[in-house]
Length: 336
Image (cartoon, rainbow, N blue to C red):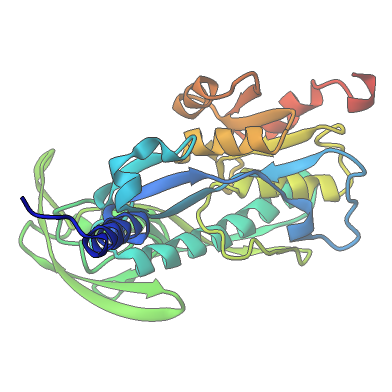
């Protein structure tokens, strides 16, 4: 019978410790979404002559996204409100982590401009909106555009012909047959690039040539007043509605009526509000901040938020104007 020495026990302990430490710090192939307490918007926004609320305030919510450790992957319940996702659900096709982070930051910058424009228009100020191209909203997996085009790229020309609207893209693509090579001039991070992409048949209309992207209107926004919004390293478009409401409040309107209001939702130039991701984590983040209500895009986002509200009031909205109307129905905080 072999004797187990103290040295062997100590060695075994070191090995087990190393394995546990590795599982705790080494990244896995999956990503984890974590709640982050909602943040007050006003300190991030500078409006000339702006009025800051004495109580209450508009809060935006974000989600911490990072590679999950091996331990987190094995035991997903280590963090309250967390979820695990494969890389395919986090990074767009053909985009790595660094590129996705840059896309998120660009989305944030764009949402800030749109938010300021929507708030100023609502306040009766003149805002200039000039069509400047077709912005890539999504790249479909497995299509020719993967690895060549990215979300937020702006198509400014097709085969040398100027593009100002998504309608221009559809019209120009009609002149191509599946298998043709199309030359797309795009603007990305201040650079102009030329991409040659061989088209494929549209599964829904085989005679139609496509490259596999969804486009929206790209706009140059001209504001009558310089409004500065600095969200630091936070990316993504989901704080757009929160920024718009805070700018409008700083322009002299009683938006929150003394309440602490968490807000999420992408905002568009026409004032409409679009759905966002990470609703579960954002609802937890709103609750952690102790807000009085949470404005969420109507539909699936609002239904998801209600699952995790835990008593928090969820207010679904479809537009900036509807958000103002619903907040106006809240009793002033001092009357409660």
